[in-house]
Length: 334
Image 1: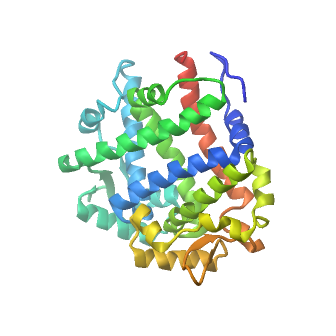
Image 2: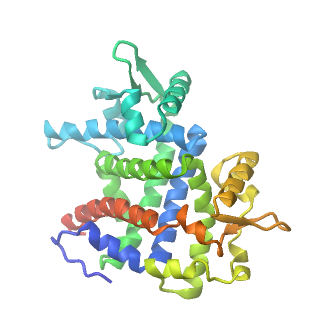
């Protein structure tokens, strides 16, 4: 356990060290958080790529809201005040070229998806400036707040696990209340991390729906490893992968049906993308059960998703965000 004292600045490296030490446990919780986040945005926009584009506009709205504090230090950036803030700020815009740069999605794909989002009413186009702004119709308000409420609870639960391992003992509710009270501040940084992470995988996989499916196989595998082998750090995981008995991981297998039910991806699409992950070497498919599990034998598998570079990038990216939250909690003497 890393000691945490009041008024001591927590560095991202502290968080990285903690996650690397308790990899199987904490990364399983993190992947569960990410799975929930990605499932939510997939079900809303029917594509991770499409949702990723919307996140660009959403993040900029939160940035514009927190900039209001430069004019008024008492400006309310809470979740409770978000709808009012959204309705009164000067709406920031993005051009297709800037969205391409932020997301890593090919330009023609961005152009096509922005056109679809505009037709669906999620974006508004400024013909004069050839730019777009985020549009939240009144009818979407309840769905938006329901989604945010769920994401806030999941994020608070994960942060609370980190907090306890660092020596603090605030409840989930204390963390949740902190995030809600400074919502746009935290959500701007949260979405910035998500965008950076999704861009990394977009450039790696060219299809982030594959990432969502890969998480469904990774989570039960890490749960199995954590339960069977207890304390497993980031280096151990690469020694274990490839040496765990194949039959022992049978309970970690997933099916196209279960993937479809959890993620919202149509079953036929799930089958096609599961088979693509098999071709990449990340998964294997049992011919009798038609279930899929992480490939424990192919050396090439670790080059695709569970490589050290990919894992290290993920930990580093989100450690920076977690440090922001924990330093705020610490500053408030929680």
